[in-house]
Image (cartoon, rainbow, N blue to C red; front, top):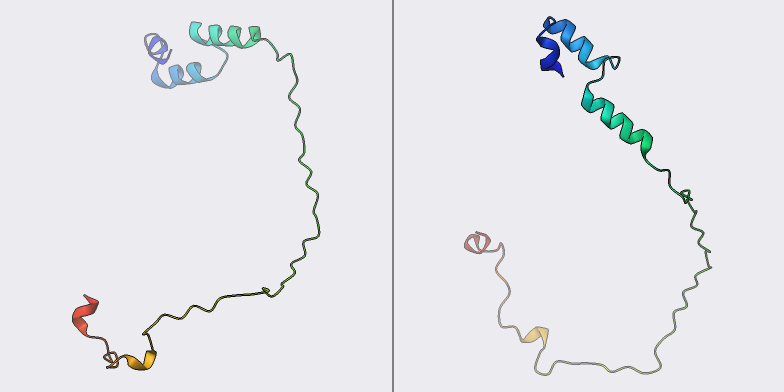
Length: 94
């Protein structure tokens, strides 16, 4: 539409005429016609609000009635023959 208006008007007048809404082109007229002919929805949109009931939560800690103690055989912290190096070696950090 701007190109068509530029053929007969100056640039500023063509831009104003193109975007003022008072002089629609054929495409704009067809779009407006289509919008007017759209059917309204048979079922109106009904927004519903979700309602959640808040129940009082109670946490009751009970000790187990029986348990098994797992011991790794042959492991004892005192059995490590050396202490870790302090500070750590620089090559290990790279």
